[in-house]
Image (cartoon, rainbow, N blue to C red; front, side, top):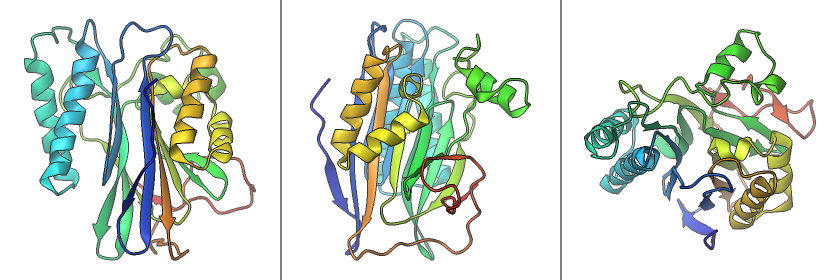
Length: 283
């Protein structure tokens, strides 16, 4: 695994972000079809799929086009969709992507400046995930686009049965596999001490939510946290490529920046005091 270092960016006089990202082939795959981008203000993970080199091409094309968007200086829903359309074109035109199943998941967050201040926007296509750790509790911000998630939502299987289900790897949305679909977006208030975990399913196949929370609690620095989690995923089997970003939020003046009109998260949280308030997110 390459050396991982923590990077820091001062957004304003009182808001500072630190992050680290890493990707590993895992112990059972011949190549790494994951890609990631950690470039302020966008932090994303893409998990490719498809025969031969198709998955690598799809995830890298998606990351490259979104990186170009960041370099152009503006991020919003329309520009993200435009970048993804260019990525789909790149995937389809590449000589090595002949498999109709070639595509990639996409998930992550970006920091958005709006009228009332700062807010996070998460985006998601597929079954890679964004988690938020706040006040010692962990929630899954994104909802998987997968067959097993649909079965869970309909009450046909339990979350505990999902990993062993024969369709556990089948996703219902991807970038490049078919007609372009827009990501799901969630707005999240900016709060001092928040930590985001952006990861491919190579991590969540090997670590439970409690495991992720444990390594966050044990490792305050993002680089230490990502290295510890990847090591644990490999020790637990490393069945897939493993990619993750840990992103820390800090107000140097010790304050938070919560928005006033946000909904209460409905997804269950892991850890902490069960009577505490859920992190505020708005779908």
